[in-house]
Image (cartoon, rainbow, N blue to C red; front, side, top):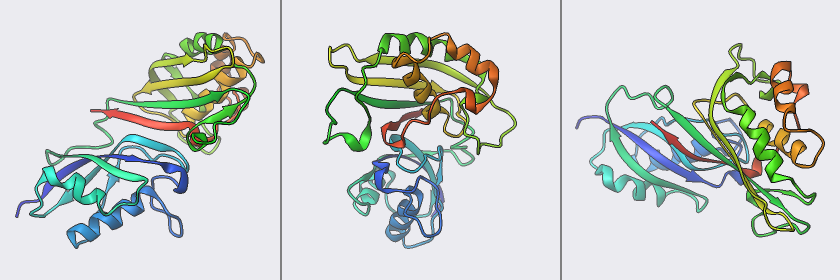
Length: 250
């Protein structure tokens, strides 16, 4: 039987996982998927992910690639794999792609959404997937600041100090802040779409926008932070819980 190249679209609640990548001694998304697919196909399987999401980060549209030699029809794979996964993970879609398809290199864009609950009372039923900020945020000021991030720029100030990549230039297609119109604040969403991202880049962007939202900085501060090319110039690292990988475009 001919080997098939299968792209999986994967959704997961990352709360109980130590990120995407397999790590000895830790429960990870890639590790659980590898075990489930290997059990289904009764062979060793390697799954390559398009994005190495951090511990606690969730996804609705992660992409993974596997090569299989199995009689299971492609249209049945998503359900068959999902049936072997824990309740906080599912394969949304399985699609055959040409051999040689690069699940990482062929990415055109990734869209992340960060969710903030802005109000006096902690949202206990949603707390696993948001950052609760009781202090009133100026979402309009955050939205104005976000515009300065759009384009091809050096985002070194927004990269983790542990990110050792020398090339820190990235392109952001859009950075939108919406919500927060209610008197008590309500929900605020930060959508960031780009071709690729540095380690912790989106969470550092959100932490910086929150500093502007609470009035510590003016929106124009973004330009100063970009020019500094120094992580210490930007805001705090937003918690992982609020971040979700919405989709990956090819």
